[in-house]
Image 1 (cartoon, chains in turn red, brown):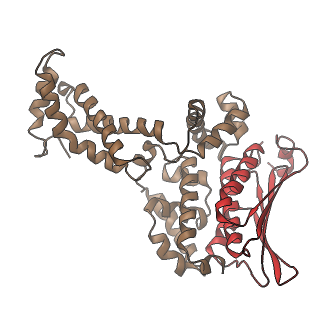
Image 2 (cartoon, each protein chain N blue to C red):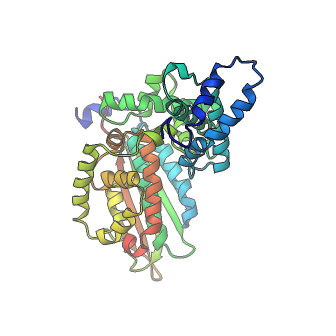
Image 3 (cartoon, one colour):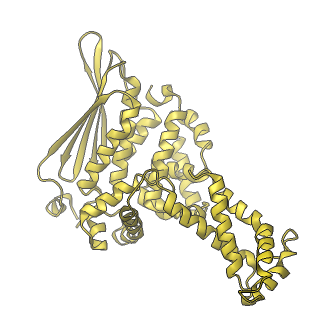
Length: 144
Length: 259
């Protein structure tokens, strides 16, 4: 059973579609964002493990970013729904030099829950920078 | 606890007397009161086992007492079993029904609760057959309902805050395999840098929550595999894992978590 064989049988969205959620970078908005994540995954027919994994991964990524966000900045979370996978890009504004370290339990959680995960640092103007986490989650074991 | 427990031994002849009386005998009421009062500690004990699950203890004691009354009414000593082995499941059953009706953190229509129960009913069977967690489309096919209904039912599951009492009762942890798997996960934990910060926080968790976290993040197992090993449903593993992560996040020093 290969990925290519299964692609045709999936009843997911053809091509890609994008959903973007932007909130004040505050922990109280994370439940809203993770609800969007699990709803998108369920509608894309992810298996139950993958739906739950994505939900928790988004929760973890957003919590990590909110911790480093500059006061008053925004958390922007973009979901790209692709055939058999969802790519999530979450980012906040932070003071320059802020990092998300990857030798932590939180990072372990992200690595376990997502199929791929990476940190993105983009220097910005006025001593600010954009810190982001990109994660990719597959719909689960391919169906026959 | 057994029927010959000194605390309850004096009630045994009363039980026999009560069940032998015809339904309209005037002595029944006084006997019944005496029996219910006498056995009340059992109902209170069972209610306490389910405290801290989001329902007030007083309500649980009341519900358990209703279960006890049913048990007293329905018990027939001539069938040979002792009262405890009859009463405990009867009382637990009553509390279970209460949770089934009350255990929702927001008002969820009956239809969706039923759908949630139906979904839970087929998930483990499908997982066994497929060797992985099922997809909503597969659940819908199995139940013979539209996918949209399954999606609604899954959404309703997020509003469900208490696990079913069957799950709580059944899984006080423990097969040898789980122990071995946790041992292997523990060795993996030893290899990471932040173990010194994590260990004490993990030690604060209830044994089952700790097991689930270890197997998922250090044992490389999926939720469905963990559900199978620990003997609870995938949805229950999902809920426990999310709750536990949230707890760990609050307990771990931000320095440790985000650097």
